[in-house]
Each structure stands twice: as structure tokens, then as C-alpha cells.
Amino acid sequence: MKTRTRYVHSPRQIENPYDPTSVPIFQTATFGQSEATAFDEFDYSRSGNPTRQVLEQQLARLENAQHAFAFASGMAALSALLRLCKAGDEILVGDEIYGGTFRLLHDLAPRLGLKARTVDTTRSACVAKAIRPETKLLLLETPSNPTLRISDLEALSSIKKARGVTLAVDNTMLSPYLQNPLDHGVDVVVHSATKHLNGHGDVMAGVVMTSDDDIAQAIGFVQNAEGSALGPFDSWLLLRGLSTLPIRLEAQQRNAKVIADWLVQRYSMGDVYFPTLADHPGWEIQVRQARGGGCVISFRAGSYERAQRIVQDTRLFRTSVSFGCFSSSISIPNCMSHACVHEDALFSTKAIPDDLVRLSVGIEDVEDLIEDLDLALGQPVQNEKEGVGSLLTKGATIDG
Ligand code: PLP
Image 1 (tube, rainbow, N blue to C red):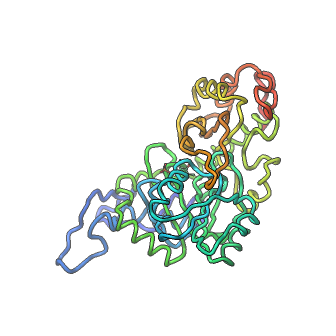
Image 2: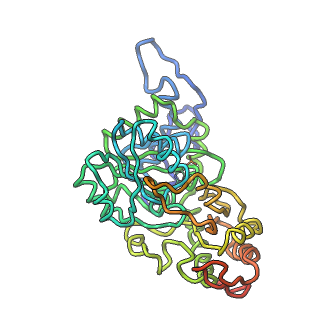
Image 3: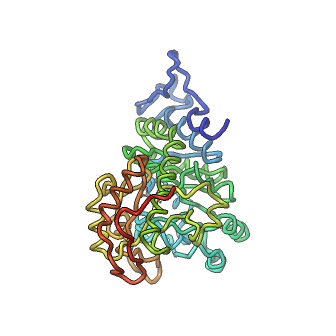
């Protein structure tokens, strides 16, 4: 089957006398047992549920993984990943990560006896140097959130193989439709399924996927032992959203590219971050390991006040955290998704500039989106801050 067909047709249907064409929602906590000591495939929904199982099998198939585990949120999925480590182990983490991941590793991991340190994963040589005997896990995002920096998965995979480290990638930004890290030697993939996988902004969910049987066994154990699995109704909603991911993301990515090019006309290059812009420092790697740049664009507004004005003035781009929804949104990462990230000498993440504006581009007509942004960007403003280019005049034409 070709890709889009695979998204539409899940591999397994649940046996049912009425042969429903939609996967049934098994909204039940328990399943009857014929005897106290005889267990059928399902006994308790925390341990396994048929609706969730169809979802997990479909997710695994789309990410080219042998196993998938659906969790109640992306953070629950990342917490389960942490459980691969034991007290005394060290986690190396990319130096630009989602704010919640920062909080988990910086504030919570030490309470579990885990040490976490950051490293610039866009420079593979730095990673090779940073690995210590106690390093157990290397976790990164590529493209990273929010400035879309790119790490070379194959280079990192050869390093981790030689050093016996588990390599985990948060693939939320691109989804399995645009990037399959396991194909590049990565051991574990994590997603916030709240974003592209569901795509409708109405479900919180997360996934851990792997083809390593030992890792799968450990994650499955945590999912059951900690009770953080996704519920049946949310599993069904996620399955429904998943089937239209290719057409949503193609439309979003097409719009995003037009908007990124348009923004480049307004700002000097370097102030607009989108992985498939030809001047992006990670462009070559991105083209090699992914099938597009996704739908998230960040740009520097010039000042915090101006960023606030832009975010307030857009109408179609709704001010909200998150990304990957079919409708467009806009945010200031520094005071929204990344508000809990702070400077720390031992755990030094890249500072998120306070004038950085992040767009998540939806499936609307791109002309409307550009008009919305154009009005919000307003009159040309000359360099309010060093490094920001001057704006072109209002109403710049759309290229492409
Ligand atoms: N990973 C990334 C890259 C994210 O952007 C987010 C949320 O924004 C998460 C993980 C956490 O996912 P959730 O909000 O579903 O818990």
C-alpha cells in the first residue's frame, strides 16, 4: 500500500457481528472473564483495550516501528521514556527542547536520582564528546521547538551505537508522514499526539514507538504499572484524526512554505526560521532525512512589545499554545510554551528570544492567512533590535 492508503486503512478491524466500518469504541473498564484464573486477550482497560490496540498497531505501522504505546499526553509518553533509566543514570538532552520537557528533565528527573545535561545535538562532535560512562539516554527534537534547528540522525545514531546509549527522538514537529527517525538508526520515537497526529486540537495524547523488544517490554510495563495509557474515546478520536494526516499536513506545509518565503521578503534572512528555506543551516540534512519542513515557522519581531502586538492583532491565527492543528495559531514561545525554560549553568538550553513569534500554519486559504499576518505586521518598522531586518512595504506580493 502507498502512504496515504495506509493512513486511511488500519491493519486490523475488531471482530463485531455488525461489521462496523468505523472502529468501535470499547468504553469499558473491565472485560468479563470466564474463570478467575483464565485471562482472555483483554481483562482491564489500563492493561489493554481493543480500541487503543487498533490505534497502537496503526501508529506503529505508520512510524515503521514494531511496537507503539499510546499515553494520556505527550508528557506522559516522555515520562515513560525516562523510566528506561535508573537512579544514577544520566540523560543527555538537546539544548533546545519543548518547555514541558525542560521542566520534566530539569525539575523532576533529579528527584528520581537521574542526572540530565544538555548538549548541542546539531553538532554531532559535541555529542560524541559529551557522552560519559553513566550516559544512558540521548533525547532530542529535530526540528527543535521553537527555532527549528536540525540534528543529523544518522551521524548521532553511529555515535550512540559505538557508545551503548539509547537514542530517542521527539518527532512531534514533523509526524511520521514527514520523518521516520527509526529508519535512520534511532531506537525510540516519542510524539505529542496532541499535535499533528490528531490534528484537530481536541485530544491530549502521546506515543512511544520502538522496534527494540526490550525497550518495548519496559515501556509496556510502565504504561500498565503507572496507569498512564490513553482512554478508549480519545484513542478513537486520535484514530479518526490520524486518517487525514497526509492531506492536512500536505496542505499545511504548502501554505507554510508560501508564508515562510513571504516573511523572508519582509525580514532579512536569519530572522525567519523554517527548515526548508534554502539558507537554513540544517537544510541539507533536513532534505536527506525528512520529506518536508512541516508547518511551524518562527520569526523575530524585533521587540517583545511588537511581538505582543502582532500576536494580538491576528484574527485567523488564534493566540494559543500548541501547533499542528488544522487551523492556524500564533504564539510567543518565550512567555507561552517555553515560559518555564530558564537560564541554568548546568542545564543550559538555548535562550528563547522574547521577540520570537511562532506560527503554526493551518489548511486555510493562504491568501487569507497572508492578509491576516500582513495587517498584524502593520507599518514597516525599522530595526527595533539589532539583527532584525527592515520590513518591506505593506502588501508585498506572494511568491508561489
Ligand atoms: N514534545 C513537543 C515537541 C511538544 O511541543 C510538546 C507540547 O507542546 C510535548 C512534547 C508535550 O506534549 P503534550 O502537550 O501532549 O503533553
